Image (cartoon, one colour):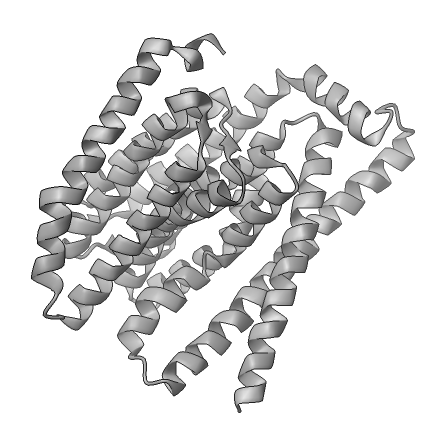
Length: 367
């Protein structure tokens, strides 16, 4: 049994690594061939594809009448994407932030997060709310592609420098295009299988050591649906495709709200119900994380290693709080007091100082 579990986990890791490599390679070359910036490919094709596990889980949960799982999956993934994925990528290598993200995508992510909490404030995301969210997703995709086409000449020149002449015969161009789409599809399939195997193996191993289902759900399963995003972003960072790495995390957050919750509310009779605890705690945390990304991105137009470490530390603190609350551990009151009285105020002051300095320099406006 143990050999099977370890084999399952090892196979999952191999599939994740291979799938991430194929996905990033196909996405970067598809972007160049189509004359679309790698950032937009990361914001759309890569991020939507790697969010497919969350989509499957949320729709299945919604149709089964388990709206809490559907909503919690999205909110938890959005917090994970910013704090863990960007934090881990920045530790691997400092990330250069495209000005487009600061001017368009991050404000849009914040706006749709605020829209979501406004819709959920009455305890439900209705069919009409879902229609609004999904319509915004369609508009966002069209807008992103149109905006990227304005940079077509620059992207084509970059492609010519890296991969050779862009003036390929029509038949050869079509074959290369299909090949890279195939790489993306195979990469996504391998990521999905790999994450499923790894989560199944890790869950079996955790149960063998007596870890409760509550803790397993809050940690292994919650992070498991985001494994494709983790691997895709880290592989993109290692391959110096940092636009794809950052775009994947931001784009996944936008897709999770507009696409996954929008579609889930549309297909679920009566819409989705939202637990009061999610409205009171988890959604405000998600919005706070979205807002926190802005000063980090603006300061120096990059995410440095210490900022990545800060993101990771907050994800660990958030996860620790969830586990302590779920198990009603005796340490919960002390942990909450430390976070509220010391950690959060210090972080708020630090982010405010970063934002003020960045606004004074106005680097992101001039760029």
